[in-house]
Image 1 (tube, helix red, strand yellow):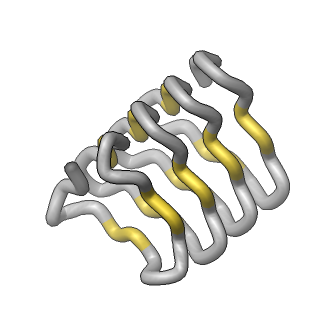
Image 2: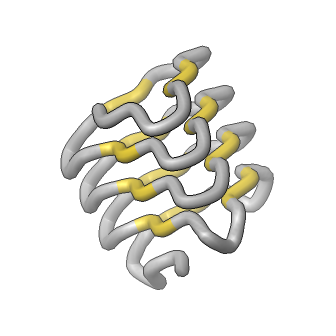
Length: 74
């Protein structure tokens, strides 16, 4: 479920089983796969891919072109 306080660009692909927490920012072109958790205040730049089951911790910053593999914690 996308937290209403999070900001997700309309062109970002966030699958329904992913969770984006408060005050996170997901930019255009990002792909957030199934069961990904994006912590509060995290920044996901354009063209970032979060693999299935990945965890992006609170305040983490992933910049353009980053690929987070399956079940990786950042």
